[in-house]
Image (cartoon, rainbow, N blue to C red; front, top):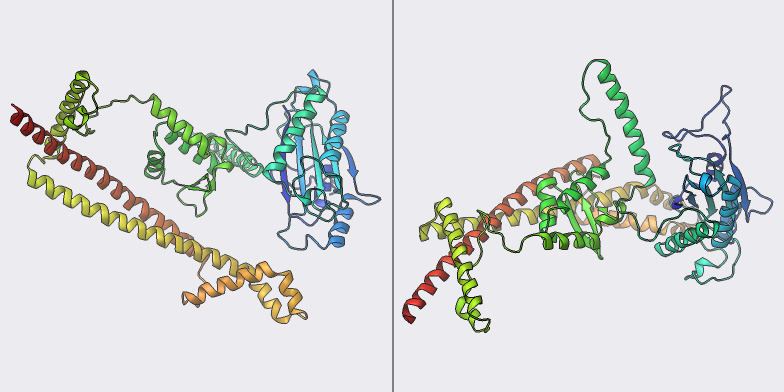
Length: 511
């Protein structure tokens, strides 16, 4: 099963990728492996070709393109894109896949999908985990150096015009995945459907973080075992793995989105929000939400709602727990629906059960007296609104903290550029070149002035303050939730008692 992975690079030193493809590198640190004389060691086996580079190397061709079109001048600009096609390890033995055949497929893929871009295509015989999967690295300079024929999958001028930058959008990735699938099918190789996504999505960064964390944990456990101590943890989990596990545990039992979000906050302090049809999660201790697409398709809105719906359907329709109170049904109003005497019997039976649960609940709470019941409802109503007001206030303060941190970070990163503007020989040109940075700097300065801030706050202090606010919010949210649940139960109980006696009076009058 061939897979396709995309990596965007902002590194302006194009020789780094060339060195990675040619020389051996340490899997964990990413550093070049040197021999005894201190020289980089070549990889044992690789095949490398360049396309659209003319008489120059890939690095030189990319630098010339940048200079020619005046692009990729900023630190944050994407300088190159790398696409990695990893073939199934079984293809070598079962389907006769060789490095030469994989290189030919990679060159064909590059010529058809990235025409006009300086490119380097390199095939390696094995992956990081020694699984034996032949894979092809296709690295392209971000700028197209010639106009190409427009193809059906090309939607915008940047996809075919000279001097435009390549953009790896969702639509582009979908097209490339289809191309990989058709490529493998034509070559008689193993392949799976790449369009349905992955239930759990692990990025390159998270993968290596897990590998390094597991290696460190293994060393620590070995040291403990050497001293006769038993390790308490044998498997390393990344922060995202922990988040996936906690969300999955709640998702397996929740029956509605409100129940899902409440359980996440109550059990693990995880906030969930929806924006533009997408879900994002904020674990306790973090200040930035994690989008569902970075965790896997299992955690996006459609999958979550589907799971909640399935949980609701599996749940019995009628459940009478010790602390659950059902509302009494108005028999007289329902009988106007002409559903028959059997329906009336069912309503009567339901009301008897609901009233029994109501009496049990009130006796357990010691609220059989109407005055005491009303007093307790008033107390809970006050506690409910006070807790809700505190939660809203903490949410406002957390939002203000987040805005302040954003402006502080922008001010720190753009302050030097604002100072350079004062000494620039051509202020107008400098202003145009650094418009984004200067806009962010001025917005931050205006925010500080509007809020009478004369000293730049400490990032660590702001983070600690945010964590403290989040902790307080979780505490008051729990109070709000408890008061809300009990208040609803008591109001339902009071309503049931009133309805029950009203029906009794009406029955006696009819008799």
